[in-house]
Length: 168
Image (cartoon, rainbow, N blue to C red; front, side, top):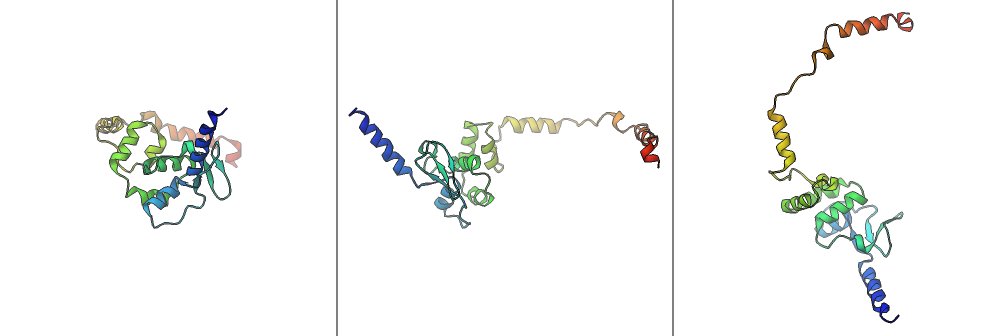
């Protein structure tokens, strides 16, 4: 019983140390000192077991709090749990390093939130870019002739005129 007490104490101390710290958009806004409005409902690290939404804040468990100084992780967290805040994203995009975004993209290449934060920062050797360039170089085939044939339109008009409700 005695051996469990320090573990519980350390857990409580860790939770209290994180408690009240900003997470997500408000962390990015305050750490970069962006000249924008405060976030209405900021995410705060609180002693909770799951993300809890209240009227004035979003409670985040200590295990889900991104590391201090990692702006990309805080932005990805905010996009996922707080929605889109264009003011903060636009202000933070000037301070984000291209290498950080490329590293986040390499870590999760199919992550939708990483792709939301990108502003033309896709690496040049990206498979998607190569596929788009190969498609652009191919000739584009027009749709089949049957879609705009000379008989399709008159037939459609004949069908409408034979309808009793349209004839009157």
